[in-house]
Image (cartoon, rainbow, N blue to C red; front, side, top):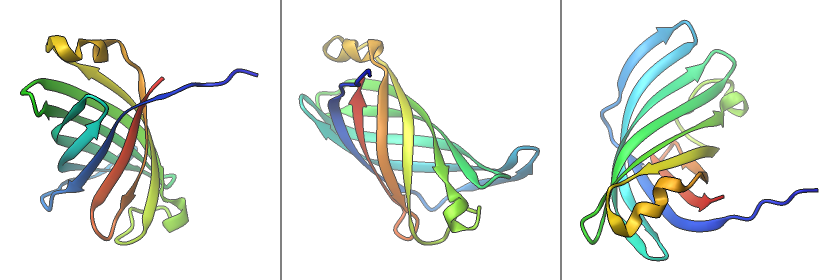
Amino acid sequence: MATVEVKLLFALEMEVENRAEPIGPIAQGARSIGYVNGRFEGPGIKGTINACDWFLTRSDGVGEADVRGTMRTEDGALIYLRYSGLLDFRQFGGAMPAAGVCQVRTAVRFETGAERYRELNCVQAIGIGEINFETGRIKYNIYAL
């Protein structure tokens, strides 16, 4: 049996901004554009993040995150971050809840021209976290595979 070893890259905490743009019902479900910002910190890396989520609540009660954003390290480097993942809303009746906590699992990739962080360009990462719908807080641990 194969095992998977991971290395913690950083912990990420974000807050959902109060300015979502609901696109509305589409063939796959309901689309909404949301904005998040926050902080990240890990071994040898620390800074802020601003991102946008092209979120889809599917008709089967599963949410699809499609997030892209910019990480700015404390030493001034910029890192493009993108991740996608799933949230299971079936426990909430199949719709995005107004309250409650939902687990989130994501596949994460990075792009940067900053020499110090260039190795991130070669990393496939995973995010394991949760979103608290009452507070709008999102917490992740991001691991390199």
